[in-house]
Length: 281
Image (cartoon, rainbow, N blue to C red; front, side, top):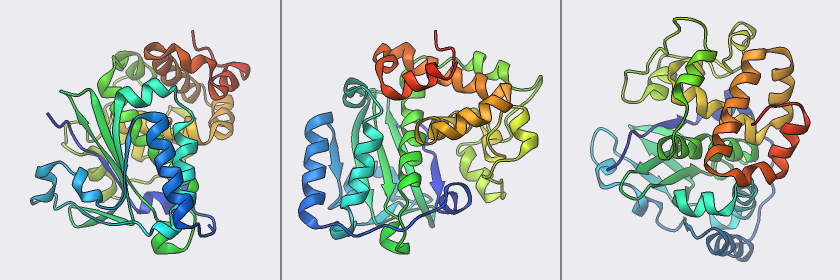
C-alpha cells in the first residue's frame, strides 16, 4: 500500500536554502558514482527513466506525475552530494528502508514543478525518494538543497517505518497548539499554496518551529528539523542555544533515530551533537 505522498515545491530551494555555483562533471564519473552507491547501499539509483519508479496511480489525474531525465554530463556533483547525504546513515538503515532514489532534471506533480518527494510502501517497509537536479535548469549548485531534500524526505519514510514518539513531540509544542493542515491529504502542499513562509521567524523559533511552513503538519515539522539537523548542524546548534524548544525537538529527533539504529551514536554527526551537550540517552 502506498502511504500519503508529500512533496516540496521548487521555491523551497530559493526561499529557505539558497543556491551556489556548480561546475560540470563528466559522464564516466557520474556513472561510476551511481554504481558505487548502488553497490555500497544495496539500493537502485534510477536516472535514465525516472518515471519508471512512479507508483502507477501517480501518472493519472490529478497528480499527473512526470519527469525529465537528468543531463548525465552535469550529474557527477549531484551524485557526490547524494553520497555525502547517504554517508550520514548506518548502511543497514539505508538498505532496509530505501529501495530506490530516482533523480531527474525536472519533476512535475499536480502541474507544478517540484523539488523532491517520497513514497512509502507498507508491504515492503521501504520507500523511494525522488529528487530533481536544479543545476540542470538554473546553472547553479543546489548542494545544500539536495542534502536537505534527502534528509527531509527520507525522514518521512523512517517516521512511518518505526515507532516515532508523536506524543513526546507534541508536548514540546505550545499548549493546545494544533497543526494547521494536519487533517489534509497533503499538508505541505496546502501550506505552500497558501503562501506559508519557509524562512525562520523569531516568534516561531521561540515556540519550537523552524518556519511557518513547519506549523502545517507534525510530519512537515519533523521533516524540516531532519533536513537541518543533518545538513546544517552548526546552525541548528546555534538556534538550540537560544531557543530551548528547538533544542528539545532536535534531541527528540536524534533519540528517535538512535532508538531504531543504535549505530547512529557512533557516527561523527551524532558524536558532534553529544559533544555540544545534546542529551541523546
